[in-house]
View 1 (cartoon, rainbow, N blue to C red):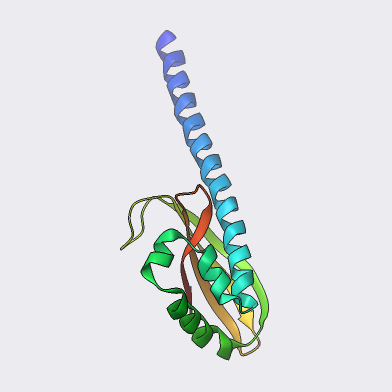
View 2 (view 1 turned 60 degrees about the vertical axis):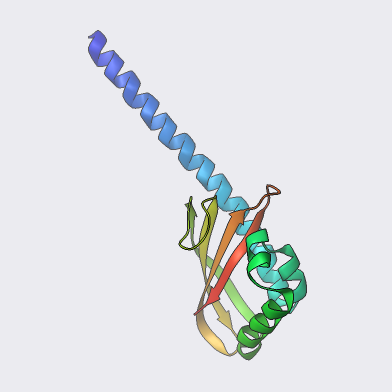
Length: 141
């Protein structure tokens, strides 16, 4: 009987640890999505210089502000204005290929633009050195 109670206690402890980790990841995902949506709003308005300033340190160290503005405008301008954007997925990760280990949330948005009805925007965020979630990667297909 004592052995059964001890076993149930261990199982309950494991399950509560898993639940706590999942809740923590969900909280991180929510904060990262809010940061990504704010950043995307800047890009939507053509505020590419400001979006570069608000991006993650790793992003800013990888591409100059001028190069980012040119790249963002060359990709987004032909699409014209945003019609809609809906979060499809958000996944917490401890590492990404080609990036240092850290805390990341990678999300995909189903988006529609005036000149591209069906698009998928992939936004990667990182918990930056200042403790804020910031965009570290952006891709549209």
